[in-house]
Length: 498
Image 1: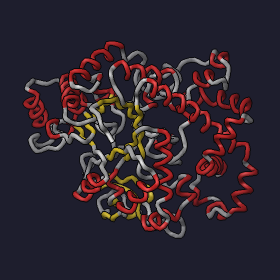
Image 2: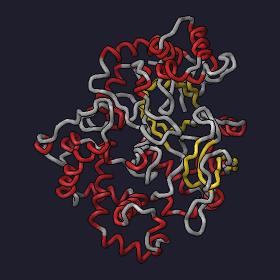
Image 3: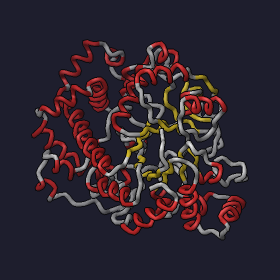
Image 4: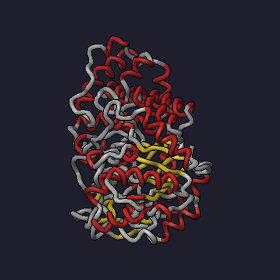
């Protein structure tokens, strides 16, 4: 997939320094694309752009749909640009400045909801909107109905709805769709606004020679349009409760493993249906992104299934997935598969064999490179796989400076200092790790923006296994400068990635 030596930056859309409470698809996104171009970068890696929920901390990996888009990322300025509202509609809206460097989810929605309502009343009958609804009906109709029914039944899980809706009786679905036509159209319109803005932003990226790497979470939650619509594709009991749930065994992040709690796929049924649901999902994502990272890739080879009643992931068991049948079907339907496999954590030989057979690059994360002897550690800079993607850290790790200051053991700090031949501070460690990633043999180098700026632990995005306090960090206004772009361009040229 990755044919030339290049580099890019990891920055979630929601972490941009936009005006209205959260990063969005408007001017701040375009400014960042221009920064990438000025810095000689070729890839912008983001996190999932599916809807998020307050009760789950707005995690982009816990979404009520694997296909839908997050309306919080819609830019008010781009709504003006596209003619959905007037410029005067923004005059009375103050920028959200109460918490610089933090996402303000509630305030972001309050700013947008009235603008959405006005645009909906003015433009709901437009042919482009109707065409969007027809083109995306295969996921949009069910998602919109699911969202409206969830609100009607006061956020109860779908298996607690009236039985005819739980079991998706055609007459009941048709009646609900008629009775709730207005709210359903509203949900569809927000999806349309996002798609219009996303399409324009992707074109802007292409004009600046920037590819977008998207992210596909492997699992979906029980209360999602995906499980409601296709319960037979998951290991559920007759009452639509999970028999087993997702997680991973003990790892770097947790001594008791991570209990994610999603329903686990019934891969036998997926195989009987030709993997149509998975192929549709990957195809949908490849229509949005130039490259697609599959989160927790090893779950496509073997998945860790935990009894649903357990409170930790310790008692899980590995269950094999028909991975070769899956990839044969996928290659038969999609000729070009620009995929990256997230292969962190407990990775066994069978996972490596699948990645090699289907030419899937994996990931190496340099902050893991000093936890044991660097001479044997696959995440040490000199051991990085040339065919893979090298990172200093990811959205799940501490920043490089934060790791050195707050997580590294004394012996790990000494290993890093000896490796780089310097008495390190957190900031110098971050800068040297960035250089090490850039000079590595990996074809693609992706750096979190926090490490380029040598930011500390306060800039961490997510801490796996901690349910609260995540997904809040974002750039402050003017935190990225032209000098940062020039400095990084120099580094990019020195190590042949421009």
